[in-house]
Image (cartoon, rainbow, N blue to C red; front, side, top):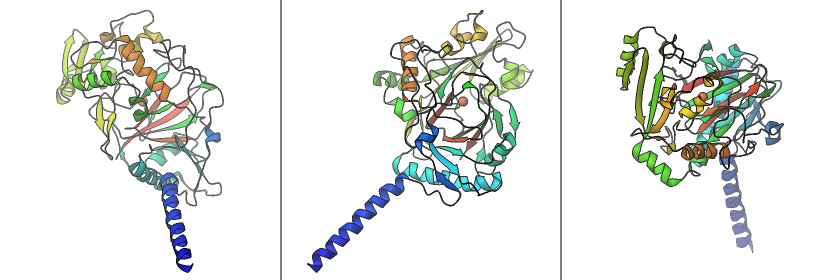
Length: 387
Ligand SMILES: [Fe+2]
């Protein structure tokens, strides 16, 4: 009888240690400075229409999701600063880093994507946000060679996408078109717009498995070619970004030097520069080594620019827009292939309810970010970092 009791006690101990391990691999220890939020606190407050949305390219294609999904458990994970723990943003950064490190340990254990929404920090403006990001202990990432206009407003903090507010920017991995890219993407909501402006996020592993395997194989075999075409600032075709703006120079020789150093193929036609490079559609995660679908195949397809209001009265061939993507041998993607890629992304994307002062920390090799069209003033701060 006594032996049976000991066995039962052992079994109970083993069972509870298994349960503890499961729970501890799922939940992070919040410590004295933070508490764990619940899903209800970040649920979308209103339906966010997608199908048929104006200036959401491919949204009229068959099967496009009607609405944006809400947040899933831990995607993003809400972490709230405890009241009464008044301290500087520098100190909050050190405490936040402890949470981020645990999230990365959990990612290594069970693959949970690192997507943390910090709420309740004393983050009133871009200066506060800059203090926080610059004290996390990561390497700053320089945006040299990036294709979007970016304006730094505080050290290591830039304004968000400059694309017209009526446009919806689809979820993408930052600089997925480039051999060098940041590993971390952080965005802070400093002023919420009156309508729209959500930051939908998407785990690229979720939508990758929805893609047609034959299409995936074709892209892997032939790679992706990113075409760039930049008109001069005084050209009537320059509606988005001139070469002077992208390369921050008026000197063509400096442009040539940059393109040579980065091993681009390039040519000039009068005052317009064309350059291109092939890249694999996949990249190995810097920590786990997992091969990820990491590219901007549909985000940078010419059809995105073709749908912009600034090109309404000037129809160009796709290769005359600032960027365009094709197969690596130059063959165009079929329209349904690009539509399907976008549909799979939006089907897997989730939105959440922003509050002013929120900070979203993403492992950007896995988690894509976007910007839904909006109305009213909106201000965000964006930071790119490396580890
Ligand atoms: Fe981006």
